[in-house]
Image (cartoon, rainbow, N blue to C red):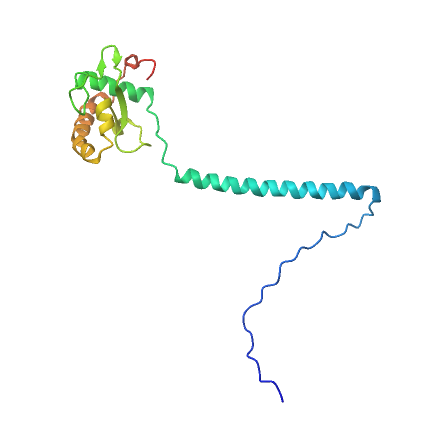
Amino acid sequence: MPEPARPLDTTPTVPALEVVPPRPSDVPRDPEQLPLLRMLEVVRDRVESIHAGQRTIAEELRTIKTSLPMQRRPLSKRTQAIHLHATLTRRNGLCPCCQETPIVTDAGKLPGAEFDHFYSRDKNKVGATWCVCESCNGRLIDTDFRAAARSAFEAYQAALKPLLGKPVQIGLLDERG
């Protein structure tokens, strides 16, 4: 009795991976060199393993770096001096946000005065930063307070514009910046 016909298997076959030994060299080898050659192969395999581990670590570091928050860019000395000069001359040394706390005098920046990146951590130009009191800087994290302070920031920036083309006295900065 003949067997029934089997359906044809049309799935593609993937050749199995196999370890292929290195091709023998045409150069005759001295039997004394065989242990040395075997040691070199072991060292090569270990070095390749180390490189593979380093590649993995480098890729993981790239992934971690892309997931980190953007780093805060510091303000230049000139930008800091412009803000201190503008706050002193246009805001009588008072915080431009609350308009109550003194932050700048003729002697320079007072303790508690802080430079704030209003828009983003990476924007550190004069038009995107200002100098405010410690209390306001802490409250600017709150989105409602920040929205209310936006008009104060824009008014400060408008008062700052006439000073941008003029030379700035860096002497208002203390040692700490």
